[in-house]
Length: 139
Image (cartoon, rainbow, N blue to C red):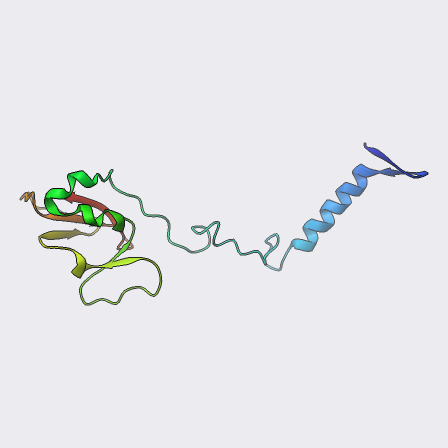
């Protein structure tokens, strides 16, 4: 126990500190059971409060290996949403339209089966379930 001298009185600080901590914690609780519900935590903990998780890039992307199929210009688009022809872009967030990709290219949605034909000048664009670009390679 910690004893603090205040003038001619002795205060038991441990008991007072515990009571003060309990009062602050109870004062901060909201109706939904969260401590300090007024604090917006979506910016800090985006994935916990509804924002989509960060895209998982399939492989290391080296721009110098994408030069033969002109994919090196799309490296900054990794993680962006690919908007297919004729579709509306999302209201918020970064995106790139399919019209901006130079032919020849191939869009690979999740679970797509690949043909055995190889073309070193064709760009392959891999997408995740949220239509975000997660991979680029020639072939």
